[in-house]
Every structure is written in structure tokens, then in C-alpha cells.
Length: 264
Ligand code: OOG
Ligand code: MG
Image (cartoon, rainbow, N blue to C red; front, side, top):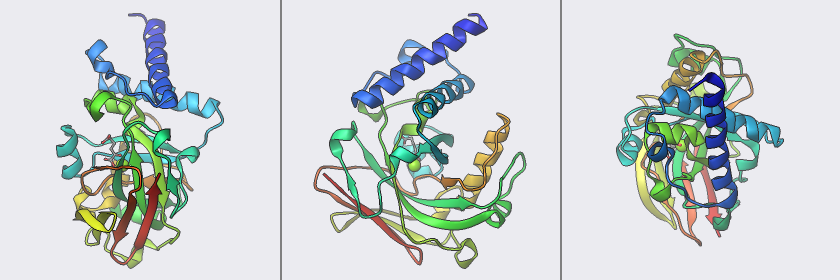
């Protein structure tokens, strides 16, 4: 394939994924039709998809990390962290409502988010550098909604699909990172008052700051960086849970507070 043909293929696949999101329809995963796509190409498709959203007037809140805990990697049967992007239209206010019919087959995740004060540019970024560049840490609840049938995919599929990003709820409390040992905080994911999954900050690469450092280092490979003012999700601490209409979802992080939403 020539360069132009490749670029046309990436655009076509990005369209296919965007259409599925708009129509709330699950689709066969792209590697069934294009088994030779590389991870590098998957990020190029993601870039195309992100570009389309920006052209529609949507705004990026920040990049996010995914598949950073063993719980998530095991559940999804993949073995490497990935990144995607969170947009302004995905935000649900804390205590707000998730409309089931806006999505396909949503799942929830308990996460810790970082609000970044200064640009972070890789390679070679460490967790300590990330903490020094972080203004606040924020309890968060991510709603993922793979556009693929049965939520099943390879690493290439899920990267192209913007890491299943769909919705996010942030806590209203802004907490200074030096007040906590984010590896030691306990995290519970509760549905209708029942704890369905739990873990510790350390589930995410030993410390959630390591996920942000890894993100900066991955972005550096594409000549990109983390920018001041971005909010970064560090990845699900436990396995993700399917949700249903009527569910009350709550994430509690010891010392940091809680964040929740209702599914209708
Ligand atoms: C991929 C997105 C993963 C996380 O926190 O691990 C993610 C998926 O599991 O569908 O957001
Ligand atoms: Mg996530």
C-alpha cells in the first residue's frame, strides 16, 4: 500500500468507529478484517478519530492511561498499558446521571486522576517528577464502552477505539498529592451499597504516578507531551463492572473521598 492508501484506510476505520459510537451500535472488531494492523497504526487511527472529534468542536480534557493494573489486563486478556483521550462531552457531574441509552454496554472503573500543573515531557520521566508537576489528585469514576461486540478486542482494536473512553465523573474535592501515599490508599467500587470490587492505589503500576510517567514517555515517542491543565486518568484499579439501569455507583478512596452517579 502507498502512504496515501494507508492514510485513507486509517480514516475509513476511524469513521467506522465514530459511527458506531454515534449510533450506539456494537461492531465487529477491526482486526478481524485487517489482521495485519500494527500497534503503531492503531495509534494513527486513534489520532484520526481524535482529530475528527476536535473538528466537531469537542475539547480534550487530557490523555488517559488504560490497562495499567493486573486486574484489568487479566480481565481484557491483554498485556500492555495503552492510552486514549478524554473529551469535555464525556463528563458527568458528581452525583449526576448516566443515561444507559446513550451508550452500548457500559462498564465502570474506579480510578485516581491527576490534575497537572506543568508540562511533563518524556522520555525518562519518573513518578517523583510527575508528583512534583501535579497540582491535585482527584477520585474518579470512568465509564468505558468498547464499541466492539461483547467488549472483546486485541490491543490494536482497543487503541484504535480510543481505549473504550465514554464517560467520566470526577470528585469535587481537589487534594494535594503530597498529603497521601497514593500507593497505599484503599479503593472500593460499590453498586447499590454492595462492594463489588476493591483494591489499592498500588494496583496501578505500583503507584498511580507511574502511570502518568509512562504516559509521558509513550507520548514522547510520538513527539507529544502532557500539558499543564490536563486531567489524567491513571487506569482502573480493579476489574471493570457491567452496570444496569437503576444502579447507584460509588467509588470510595480512603482519605481522598468519594465520587458517584446514578444509572437511568
Ligand atoms: C480498555 C480501556 C481500559 C482502564 O482504565 O484500564 C481503561 C477497556 O478495558 O475497554 O480505561
Ligand atoms: Mg479507565
